Length: 259
Image (cartoon, rainbow, N blue to C red; front, side, top):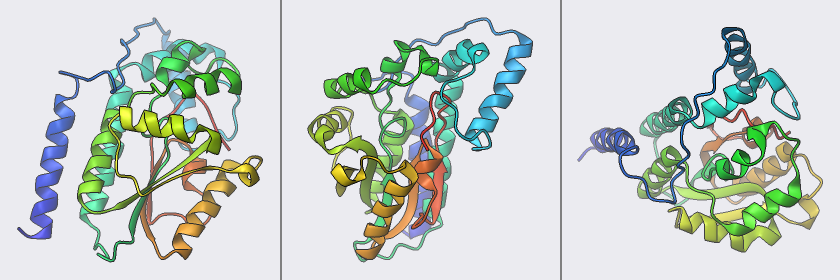
């Protein structure tokens, strides 16, 4: 089978799988009942524009979601639109993959962030206002230790496709080295496997901005001879800086911002 035909078949299977997701989900896939809070037309218009500003990075740093957008964000992240937006990002990623000429040297790489990219922390944020509360590291670390964050279904599908195509998958996260065991346990629980390397913040990385830390780690991979074809993350700091991927794919996240 020609490479183009193989990618076409994979694309069809990928979209078919996404279409089956709502029917029967294991506990390791994100499942939160949709909210249908009443949002006024005025707030809906405002919050739609606010989310656009956030996702395009025009908003810059923001500590919490706007008070008037609390119900809007909750409706979004628990509803069909969030799932559909994530599926589009995964589909665009696969379309890009179909256009690639692989090096076939064992150095074709793809980088994934973890939180709100591979794993969903919605069960945690459900108890913490979906971004309405100022982030508190202590209870979040307790949540990480549980190793129960479910997978984002579209990202898991993309991950599996990339693995089958021979990509070396690197997981580059802002989590700290002491959370390695819990993170690996959670990834396996949620269906991820066979990653090439899990990269976490070491002691010397603790006070670096995310964009600097992640750029440095990507640069190390480039120096090792890897071609970073693609990168997936929910924060612009996952994707920007130096030693960036050939293509970067931004997943939606209106709950928090990391510089």
